[in-house]
Figure 1: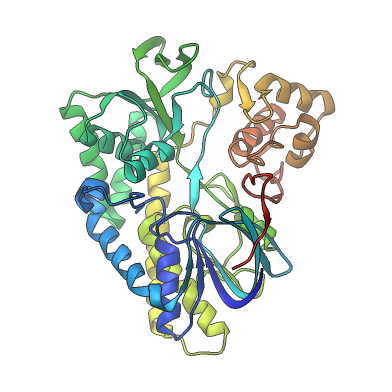
Figure 2 (figure 1 turned 60 degrees about the vertical axis):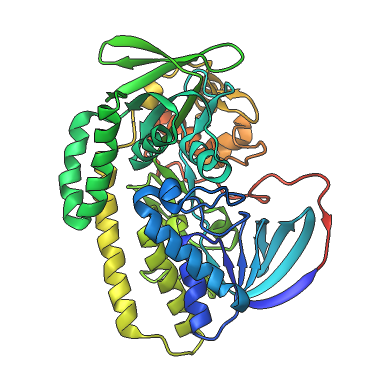
Length: 456
């Protein structure tokens, strides 16, 4: 199929929904491409089928926001070309390459808003590939979309606000939360006092999750490091260090992650320039405060341009759409844009404070055994990567990928690239900026061999 459309939005989370709403109000009819079955994104993900759970059951304190966005998007359906269950796997020559229902399709675009969101940042530790170990995002998806838990007795591990949110959601759903193991020291949480200045409601809600978990008898531990998942065929427990002592806790599932990592592969394939962001510990597409990139007609919104949360995603979605409208020669309210830019700056300051409260475990690989798998697709171990680095005196990430094969599997490095960069950085005593970034390769997500040319 060859279709020509002037304006396309990729992603139907908070950023994509607000962008679509703004474009429709300006008289445009955008194509909205959504990998999910129903709009809402990860944060406001809807069940695959309505199963009787209320918005409060699904979204807790954010139920009103979720309901409003769902309602607004549903009202847009007559005025947009919505394409759910559609994956954008490549961008080339101002064309999007899509997979929809097993068919390969192409769409030409004049203007493009990428609101691709984020995924969990994961780091390897012994046993992390054992069945029963999930990311925090996957654990949340199972609960929201499918109405099930990943286990009967679950340990939550890592760092970031999502750690406490998902643990509380599981406890509320009736699961046995065996423990919440935070890799950050307790003293880091004092930085929440700074975050309180920018969004007291959000901070109080987050603190209430931890308090409710404690009141329900859940073990909370800080400054921990996992030493291994126990079990041979499936998770049976988790061992971890807290201080000088090693502890073991029985469980049948582990959900873990270390905050979020922006999904930037499509922005890379679209030709956007990148810069290194110290706060997110990753390379981000370069944008101005409205979401404009160096590529004419390409705009970014939401966590795909830098982790800032759902509220900031709504702001950036509207801003990107207004910038697009303005660049197309139509009128865009400059006062409204100024208000949104200032609101976005405030959200960025909030995010800075939260990052200090949930810091990344920079010394992670000082304690990870060499036989631990780093790249699960290609079954490459940490020691194999280190040997490749030292044996070839490697100092650049793409070269390491080429010689070690780490990041060459089905996920194209989406899940292991952060760990690969950390190993190279720590082994050669280089900054993450100095080792560069992995260049995106199509397909950005796995495609079936049965993919064939299709049409509408």
